[in-house]
Length: 369
Image: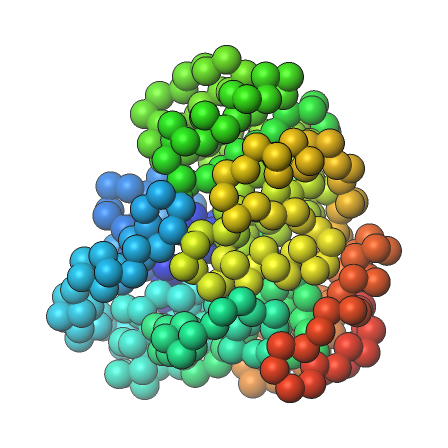
């Protein structure tokens, strides 16, 4: 089977998920080409596992000082460039387009009538899951930004819908707790983050940031350039993580038993909804701005425990290769039956109220779809 895998490159979370899927698809013998869009070609890093990948301009989101700039997002994107890229992309040699919220390959697949399966966190928001301030424009983006023939969402809980557990990397490092804190706040200004962290001189912070051009030390804060292996080393050895409200980093953190403090990107309902969901589940604390008191309270808190997440990428890769793409129930049951939450989280999930209409919570682990 030959697959074109389209990946949204705006955030590193999509790329992290694609790395795991690349590994799993390679193990089952799929022939995969990768296409990334959403950032400049020279801004991608640690991409060796994707081979001779392609890039396109695509569409992106502009952020400033910790919030989404909707005007610049609207004015800096070029729909005519997207239209030309969609027209030029030839899919005649592919059996399937696999898509992670990437518009060029998704719209090309629709135009050329090639089967397209979307595997993304955004797809979870097509269902009744906890949401914060969802607007009509958010619903349109979720549904039409990268349309597909079949949508599979990933989330921290299924909410009795066809949503799979998170795709997290298999752990290659020893999991320890050296008392340090890993910080990844790419949407905040580096100097603002440093002003916050240096207040807590008794705590060692490792801060990875896209503004860092070299590794530097600022009192109790080690500023690091973006580097995947170094980042994962500190993720496995820290006691907790301070981050934004994306999906992949919190997923890895809870699978390793690391406590979480999250500051969502303002104006981005997906991040705000993610943070609310993790709070409702008892898996994270949040702050709406870079608050010293919130950091202090969180530093003094205890971790909840780790969430056992199965090898979702391999299970999905085998399901894709089997070709029975419209029967997902067995895959859904298989994966959620292996998820194990701390006891307090089970109680919290069952108490999450429905967002619209009725969401029935049968059981946390073995509920049937």
